[in-house]
Image 1 (spheres, rainbow, N blue to C red):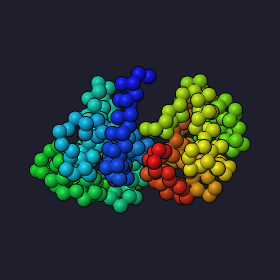
Image 2 (tube, rainbow, N blue to C red; image 1 turned 120 degrees about the vertical axis):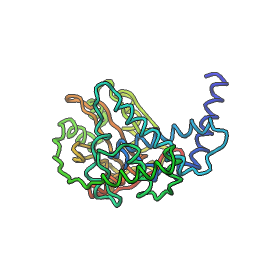
Image 3 (spheres, one colour; image 1 turned 30 degrees about the vertical axis):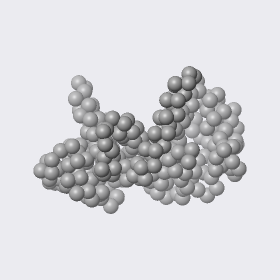
Image 4 (cartoon, rainbow, N blue to C red; image 1 turned 45 degrees about the vertical axis):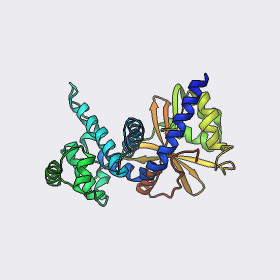
Length: 307
């Protein structure tokens, strides 16, 4: 790597870390906001990651930093959400993804309730910002790039459409490959674990690490999880175990450390092989929410490994 490129990479990392010093304390609220908008913990985490990345880039183009970081980060997230829904709505097929058209049944048990699918994206955002995060009308107008009058109208329309949906979920049948993976994991057998992956499998910690193929997964995340990361807090890990659990109509993996869940892993299966593993080890809001719904204890580890 040439010196200019190396210097650029170092400067970007330094700026990113300074950005996190200001905006990372807002991450829990950002996740909650995204969770209300998307209706899914997985989509909320993706949206929160995208919001932080977009905010970092946008901040570099602004003449002055925003005077109200909290309202501004909500504005970035709101714009991403509204643009996404508009993009989907304007597709020729007219198909709208699940997170844009269906409220999450479990959301009705949250303190603020869940907005039904008929709410327009701006109505949903306005009600969440007012009733959940208690922003002022002026702050909501700033977050949604609109006027106070438009916010009042959106709140009136949105509140008229609130609904508490009933929850009726079917337990998914776990693919056999997940049981085989857990057996290999619990035996600490890296060869058997990686044999269950496709050659194109990706193993990812969103926003932090992504590994392509069985060899990279075996040498990286799998080895670190089972046998400890030399430079991390788990340098002397006790034996971990994996189990399959049903959650919101899909099968997920819980990786336990002692009596607590250490991370949640989402899995994509292709036939009798695993095509993708996504570990939410550094997504504490996701881990806490899902473990609370499953009724199991957990531990969390912050948003990144370099602190």
